[in-house]
Length: 350
Image 1 (tube, rainbow, N blue to C red):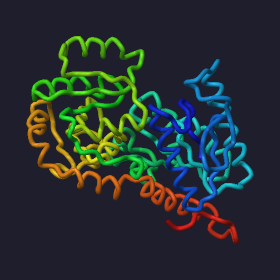
Image 2: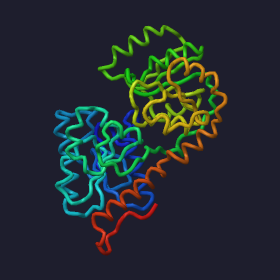
Image 3: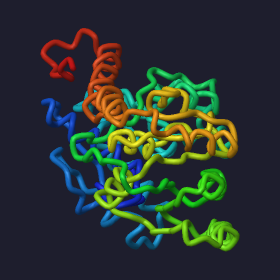
Image 4: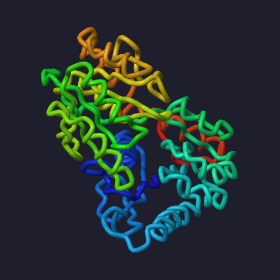
């Protein structure tokens, strides 16, 4: 398992790729799989840990690109002797350049990276390698790739308490960036006359956008809480009437959406990207096309049963469901590579 290295493993707050990779690794180990994790020093895991770099890139790094290359190279060199059944890369596109240099199958989970046209030349050069998409919608970014599965990100649903939704507010959480649409969430909440709380990171490149957004709101009913840790986020979601998920881009998944469902909180999402694959309109929330429709849906949020949201999260988006899907994929890829290798231990059936 090649981890992302931008944030701590597991991350205490923001770091969605690291969080998913950690939860997948832990669940695979609990299912009896022998997992070796390549990650920064100090990572917490039940797998066999091989330190590749001294610390995550967000801690301190003199040369992030150099450390990233070292991280990938150490993993691929270790896999070169054929001792692994599968190499699974969660690290953007950079691991692909090593993928033809070893005989072990290298499968890459895209995590939405194909939305950026700058990645396309590299991805297309390795289009025959096996790729996993987080949603069927994600494939529209680059349909030429060799997709072997669509596996939604999973979360540890058992750790997320179901909240009563009694806080009387709406919530927006995620990066405070134009494509995520916090300004649209503010507009919908103000038009509906319902308080809104925002939580998430403000990246330097989007700080001016977000500060202008908050200045335009000028309302005590709109409160920015900053980045939250996991427990704080889950409590915020559990007390919310609904999560508002506006979009200006084809969101390939949306981890916060399934976290909200696990907390029992319905979601009002723009009908873009993976949202129609995650949400069932009228059952776990509402799919809308603009602010006016979102305002109308806010008035109907009482029609959604919170227990239904939780049941869907447990059935479709748990870490167990994710790990079982990946274990099945690993077994198939390993069998194609060495179908007649006697006695070689492989992934146990899910």
